[in-house]
Length: 347
Image (cartoon, rainbow, N blue to C red):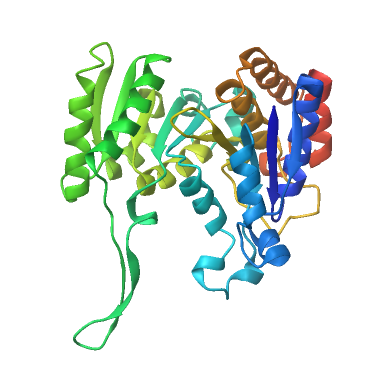
């Protein structure tokens, strides 16, 4: 099975290197890798954040393991050439529409959460985020008002098929967990959200065993802090999901701990940590590789049909934390490679 390895920028190469070490230890020669530049690295190499050869590799591969993109030196470029466009381009070209972001607190990290330990310990949820629509892919631009003032605009839209498709992923995810799905929208203000809610209710008829609830996004943000244990699976749109999943990461201890998977209809996926490229610490051995290692475990489970190997990796991460290993984001001094060593030792 071929893995497209796209390390990207900043700490991306450091964390993906540790994930590959773990994959090699678990899977041996069952996996092969091809590496290609993406993000600012892609722009510097080929003049575009998603070079044609990189996109071709992603299409040929059985799965994509992605590091991170982002580089302040590219901030002056037109939007289409900025590093972040690589991830949007991959989602569009590979038809990746369903992002799964689990947020579960490892017991050893209760003191790292921004919440009181007794609240933080209840966190065990998955956010299912639609990633191929919404304001990120809608019409956008700059224009001048009749009064001569500059005005920026971004159009939020979903059609009913797009909503039904992601809703089914939400229901299926809840079916495999504790049977509760909360659909998050802003139906009291947005027509897009009203359609979202209507379609989710329609799809729910096919899942009578799932307990469905609805929540406005502002209340959901508050409830994630107040009582995160009430959530099992959250399904929401691209913009709201982007915000809520980062919030959930800090409730679970650190953004450096949370993996993600973005899947197409056949469960081919792109797997990445939800943190950014962190250029301020790149090359210093301070980055936490656990989110990328856990993303690799998700890759084994969802795209490569190796759930037992995924379980082994997740257990090894828990064992490394239980042994007291902590990178800087968790208040410790363990280096990136040392954390990789600790996971390998636990394996």
